[in-house]
Image (cartoon, rainbow, N blue to C red; front, side, top):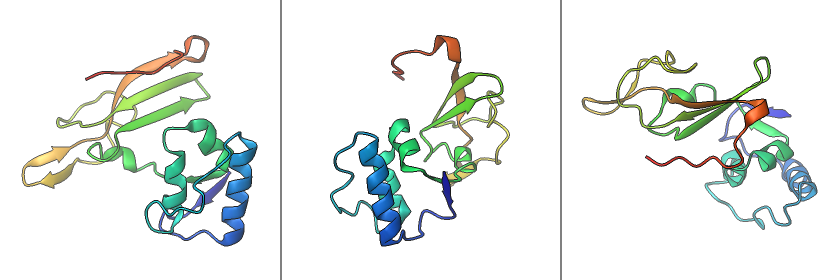
Length: 141
């Protein structure tokens, strides 16, 4: 895996060709057809992987978003794969109250999005052992 320092960084033509090759090997015929999703930085290209862990891993690219979980207004979902404990965790969005549930609870003081309106880090919703992973993750709120 290659870490990209910023999602605003523009990939080179060679990096884009390698990305296209990797996702085709993963079984995806077309990875954007040269379209630009949002600008022309890595965000535009990695956003096409959103919600598809297989495709994201196949891309071989990642951006360190570890602080993004503190912004539950923008970070809708966070997934943690804990290889030490053999656990898969699902963390949820829109936390309007301070909480102490999950590994991200103490990240950041909360983000004031409007005067008096704060959002706190994502909150643990579910935790699964590797031996009892659900086949389909669907949550309704």
